[in-house]
Length: 243
Image (cartoon, rainbow, N blue to C red):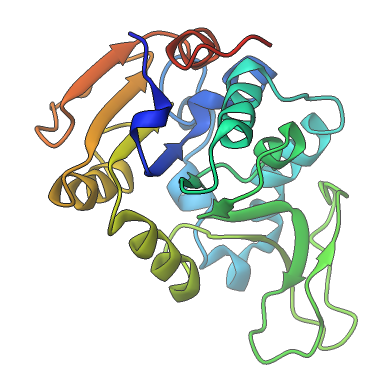
């Protein structure tokens, strides 16, 4: 399936862990996913900051080590090139659930990191004056403490039990108001956030496309089209991009 991107004015892309799989990063669901290795909703819950902050780092810290050598793959580069190819009258928003920063590394500019970034650390105490700072230390041996208030430090990501920050939620909603092309790539189409966002896009009259290795179970009627396969193979061909 080829898409003539010149026919669309407000393009919104949602990406999930499946986009980064070809870069050697684990997905959450599916074969060899993190769901199989960890009780991820329990270990990655915000409550662990109070009782066992080391579990947060044991779960998410290894990603910092993986990202020392991981590189963007063809899916990341295809989306970056797609954004570069647009005319001045076209709007492009890339919403990602991923916390790995590989979209930006590939060259994408207008990126909303829905769940934050693993590349930064902040204090778990919302009243602390410590500013969020760049940090790629995995902190696997011991959860670090804040030098200002002694509360645990944490990755700058949305943990289970937390909600997406209001400012990011607003940006997402604004991007979908006039959306005429919506793609969900490498993420389940039947659960949040894809199932939620595609309804907004469908209501706006957008063409809605689902791209993933696995079909939607259960199917989501708001997606008009479904293409199964690897994002790094489908996207360059779909948009006629040579990498």
